Length: 99
Image (cartoon, rainbow, N blue to C red; front, side, top):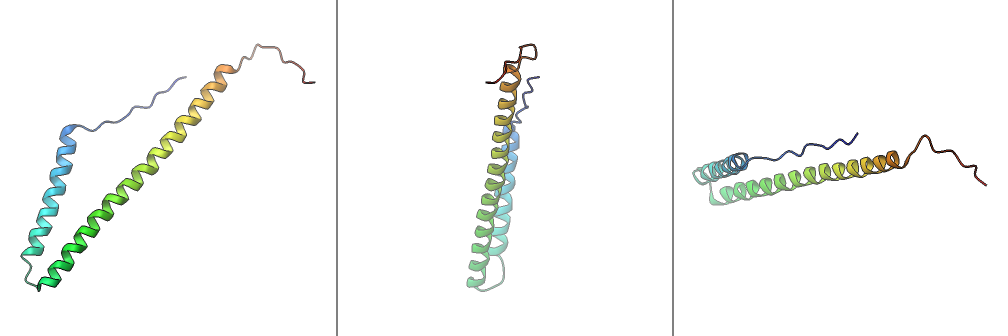
């Protein structure tokens, strides 16, 4: 009755691909903004907008991950309580009358 959930672990290649993809995307946007035929203030505005969007994406990913981890912790606590109740329960033990 003891079910252990499988913990997923990402490989080094997955992390490498994610980092490379992020770096390439950010670099491509930076080069595009740099080569844009516009005033300097327009390019600066777009650069700051990209940085703001990037930090917002990281924050959103962290919030989602934290919420998922809290759900897993609550699930583990509930599972541990249920296992303790099941271990302590003896159906063959005579019931004692309450006074």
